[in-house]
Length: 527
Image 1: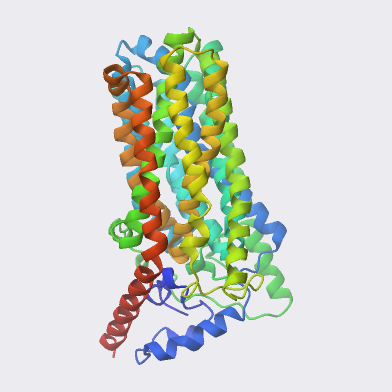
Image 2: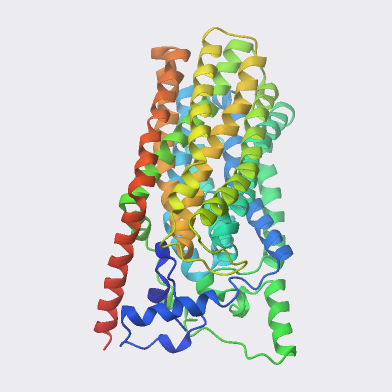
């Protein structure tokens, strides 16, 4: 059974399969001896889950990822009402958005690493217990300080679900399939911007803002019950390709049925040697920071964070501007988010198909083999180009849409114009940063939750700053020039992504060599 150190060779596609038990204590291995392992790995199924089971798993992961943006966006229509009820300014209420995003960036640093070590199910359970408790507190609180602190807890519980969902996709889908499945996972999370404001507007308008949080309690508790019964463990360090049963306490119905079927067929069930909870260790946020400071990933994360900040600038500005310019109530403001969210959801699904198509197109051009349900070594494949080519037209359209949105608001154009623009804005910007998110999972397939946590960390911190600044910027510059500046900053990511396409493969190879050298040193130290 391979140790976690043997498995951590993410970016180069040379991870040692968990079906190699003899390598665990062999301290005499050198780099040359690792190469046959790659061939053996490609000969086994990447995942034993059937296509229908994978779709089901991705659907549940997508549903779990729905709670983070839902919790953020369902709150938007009630911002004005909350400010009045708690007797605070709009700027202070907007700080609860900022704090939410800060914790949205920080908490996955801990839970992402924990999920890669201990499994997806334990990580999900921890997240939802925190989340449900925070929502109960939010429904009962009566002052701004409690609102602020509990929103941080709510974010800590819900935000990691997106990183975990990306990890689930990496567990069950090969690189040639990953674009579509990442699209489906992201579509679930982006239904939040579509449905959240509408639900929040309805609840705030007719039942009061407290009903928003009671609704989240009921929805998340119902999901957790279904999750505990039906969602299988997928983490490759725990169950390999799904053929290794997880610990009994971590078994779902699907895991139990797989184990029973194997027992009936007389198959020998391999028990992983690393079962002790003490070997999991405390989650290490430094692993997330290590990814942040890699050459290629740092450029990718900065680019994605800028796009995400622009996306959130638009969303955070809608309640106050639409209330002031068009005199809308909470429900009407919520309905204005529908085009934004629908465009984002459509983009996730369609963009995933384009990503898979472009991957296959470049694979044919380079004579690169694609074998169904087999691990693919991406060391000699331009995966950066295959993914990022899709982003450029979307990024350009999204930036132009931000400019148009700002000037429509500047001149108080009929509300139909900015709401239509919101659809195209959501469509284009979501497609852009989803492309980058898929590339990160390609580069770190065995630590996808940690890699996605690094993405959350950078983009949420930058997004938090942008959300806090957008209202003062609008007050100081005017709506048109504020969003024009935002759009030009977003367009500045195009040369950054071109740098990744040009130099990314070399940086990836450099990292591979360093990882192999580190493994050789560890092997020598074990002698």
